[in-house]
Length: 184
Image (cartoon, rainbow, N blue to C red; front, side, top):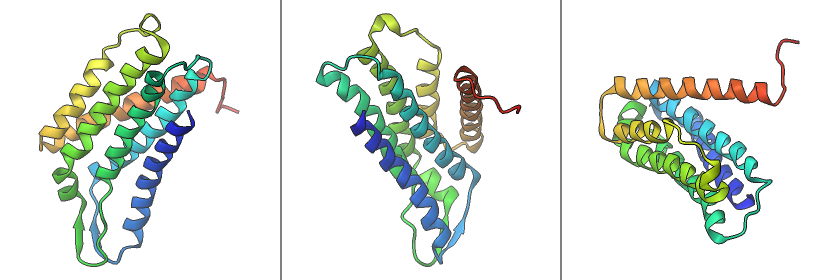
């Protein structure tokens, strides 16, 4: 758990550090909503993955395969975090739309592998008899894989919007399940 948590922390640091570098550069940064949206989405995925790992705390981790199943998904998500975070020039112009479109394969191929690896890790760690098949096991990776290929902004926006909605729903369900209330 600790190794996977450190890997997740590296990815989170890269995203937040990238935002900081963009804010303090003297270069003219032309922001783009897709780049910002996906950096937030990857950060939330990293946090969600870290939170999800805690459900394995009660299970006996008995072999190297189970340990690898904890660490490997984190590595893929961190690779996406590094790909989406640009090297920031000290001067000149940085067009975030152009950067995002140029890096879509290095961003979305690791994110696709991340989703596949998290589904595999559930089976490896918890056992196949404890994992239910969900449509998202196929739809999520297929959607992200399409983003590695297409340059159509609207497709990127639709997938980001759907992912954002899914995250909000799961966060709402999770908050309700742990008994937190925001109504006073």
